[in-house]
Image (cartoon, rainbow, N blue to C red; front, side, top):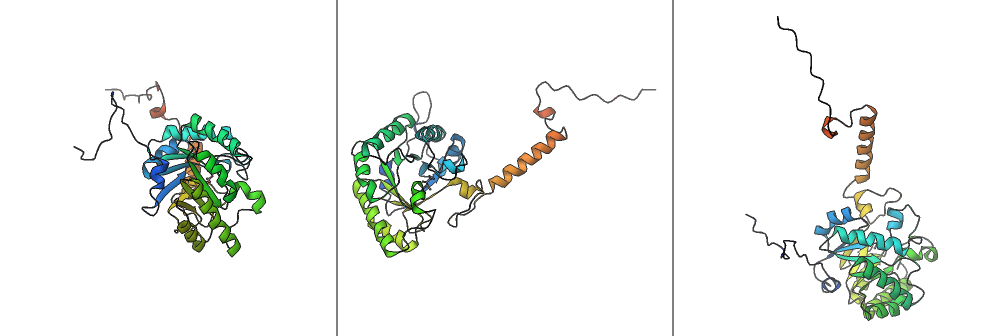
Length: 293
Ligand code: KIV
């Protein structure tokens, strides 16, 4: 018999699973590293959920799923559809959904309207938005109205057209000072955690020290309180570009290619479907018995 503690059950036997909350994540500052990964679909969320603290429905899905060049073209409806899928596929992780470009930058009121749609339609725990000091009043506005917010500073992909490409931030002392000011502004505004993307290790460590909220790094060294990664980058499912900071833990793209090549070869050679894949398959033609003499 299993000695593992069993989750409590509802009447009728359905287990009650308690998801991690933004408060649980915030309380992990300076404790065990926080593990976050992007998810866009229900089956993938199901595979990842037991292993991570946070599932981020990131707008990188514009590139990973929809073949866009940047995240700028992703819409709120797309984020909501994928957010719902990730909620359906998971039960334990804290699910956060990105607010896409154009849905929150113009004003705190716009941001609240977009966040309220995400929170009520998806049922997730909070939203993420990009930007430092300039977005702090918006973060405060959302948090004080019941929306947990994850910040995102450093390399902010929605600003790629201003940044002039996906380049490492904080290399000059002026940029580093600005990043420290950004993290302080966001943590003071009530962000429960802050993604720090694409910066050098000493700056990441300084940012993490300056922030009361846990920092979640991507391409920002081990000096952060946790790590986030784009799933496709570690699973070998995105071949257009491999960032230096990602590590390949699997080669699923190669596996897909090999599997589909084998399937195609089997169909062409009439090896698939076989009798075991066929409903009401005609019995194999019996061999003619040799006549008894
Ligand atoms: O959209 C995304 O996947 C993200 C991560 C890079 C943090 O924002």
